[in-house]
Image (tube, rainbow over the protein chains, first blue to last red):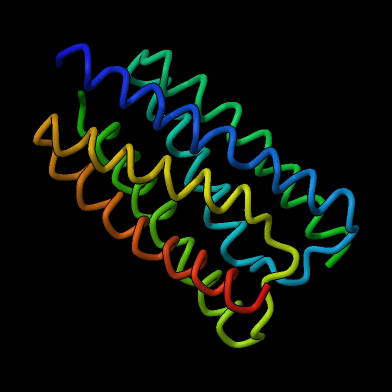
Length: 85
Length: 85
């Protein structure tokens, strides 16, 4: 894997992980998550948990870190969705 | 990588990719995406585009397929968000 691919991969992981922060903030501020699909939120959270297990099995630290952060943010989104509807 | 890790990885990719379908359907039906963060949607879409480029550079078909489908679904979400607010 060359240098350029690694940079693109790091940008990709950084963006997809960080992207859930503004979503958490928006639901938190507006106290509303009605437009969010509960099914989508549950499927995504279970999927990210599987990615985390996969990373642990492979001892792949970047997969573990990115998915641990993404899982935390998505559990917040799921919690806010269940609370505010 | 053992058999069990591959199964977990496939479940992970399947779930995180498919999870965007119920979200597309929900916005489409309700004609409302007000609770979705535009910043989150743009960041995630750009991030997934980077994952797709990364997969192409690595000639990694599973990364290419999962991210191509995820990109299509997230472009739909972004389009619906811009249309319905």
